[in-house]
Length: 187
Image 1 (cartoon, rainbow, N blue to C red):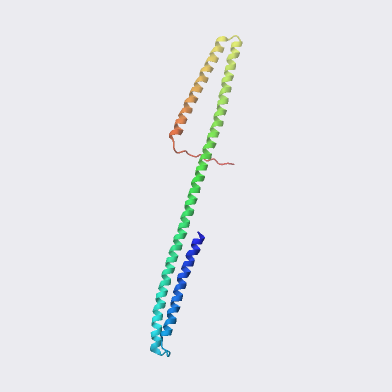
Image 2 (cartoon, rainbow, N blue to C red):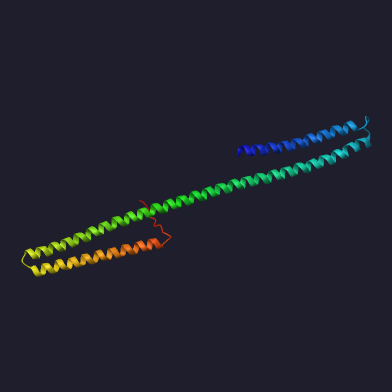
């Protein structure tokens, strides 16, 4: 891109140089065409055309400068727009990355929490089954069988409810397109 800018600047310099050379050539031609003795009228005939030529070249240079400014401003704006677009793309990528990472962390924490809860519930059921087995060995067969049956029913209900909630969560995730990120402050 810098070569294009350098080429554009060189073209602008060339245009200004052409204007300067043109004014000098016209001045030399007018002096060659002027009479040898320069009285007031001859000097006036020489100065008036040079004044108008200088004025036209000044307007020409002014026009060149305005066009050059406009082109430069457009190039700068274009550069800013490209940089802004790049920043927006990078920000969107970073946002997506953060959302994915947050979802992974949430899933990991949920998995750990469910594992801990399942272990605690399993330990409680095992303890109650142990008490039921103790009753059976202690010759209290009816009470032991009732405790073990109730524990088995509770365990079956717990498993059934867990499967139902898991299926419901899978359906909610499949339906939901927008995920909310839960932000936590790390200490």
